[in-house]
Image (tube, rainbow over all chains, first blue to last red):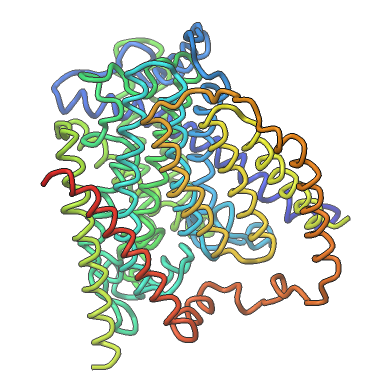
Length: 410
Length: 166
């Protein structure tokens, strides 16, 4: 250990990057499963059911399919841009996760480190810089494919992303005014209001020094713009299948198509994390700090869920399911029990636990919207962005500044 | 060689490569992409000097907003490959010597200059908070005038776009 000490500054981030990429890619895969399952149940269908128990191996089957598919090169494409676009999309989406803090600083084996890859003091700006570049992936894909549908999809997407980036950026200014910093970590710490619990979060906005103001308007604007930025329903005009076949990725197949897909889901995770940090207190618990009993909540959730999976799985139709599902149930139960028995570990996962719960809720909301809302028409989309969302976010900036100024002098 | 110097040479090399590629490429989109590469490398260089805020703004404004519009317009016009027209005689004869002369002149001016470049040493400027304090106190009038200038440009664009309707 001591021989490695001088190189720890290099080793630790590399390990963290590898871990994060692994976790996020797995999460992406199971997000597709969750999305199909949730939408199916909303529409009174079963969803994926054949591959593995409850379709749990469906992402794996999809992955194998993507790798084995033929990858034809359409005629007349601009080869450089055509190959570069999917890489760019995925790369930027993964990079954006680098500045997100998933929990408070932790100390493992005496080495203190931040819970996340990079702790930049302008992390919010860095994130917006990466988002600003992500439009190129889609625009280039649309342009290089040498197809009218792709080109139209790419053009629509660029116009949409430029329009909604304005309200996305302006909607967080209220939070910045209250926090007085661009660091995501400090923005979360600012929302920690001790015994007030979730009332300290920016969506309610009761701060320690009294300079708080509810950011619910900013939150709504941010979320709507974020959905538009990630090209999801009801703003998925770049890939409106009834008009444009599949939009900017019409001409893509195999792994290159999968990369756009993974990029989109990673961007969803990044945006959900960002809204969690900015408006919902990041890794903070919604309960007052003095309620230490709530620290056992991970166990309270995991153990019954594990037991339910176990007893429900025993009666599954296939033999494979009757082995796998109780196995998963046992693992969940054991993890829950272990957390109960080792308070030190339990304290360590409190932050990430709440962070994950909130991000999961945001992602579920995304899926829920997809199953509920119809798509915007293009002129409605532009009108909504420029004539409603932008003025409202500017009004939020003015209102928040006015309230803060009044509190400072009054 | 220190790590900072290595990174500097990589970024500077990439920036020069991008700038040359910008001119050499025959397709407008490839030229635009090369320009984006230059912008990103410049942002990296700012980051190397500790100017995080300027680096992020460089990417957001130039790498993002400005260049997206360039790419957007090129895509919208569906501009094809450039065709080489025959050079003017004057350019082929006098161009290279004049370019060399200009490069030599600039190099000589930089080599002779005795002014100490303070860019990398203004430590207090690196913090975003200090920068904004300066912008809103000492430089508030130039700052507001610049934003006024941008407002004029926005209004001009709107007026030009509206004219067709009447």
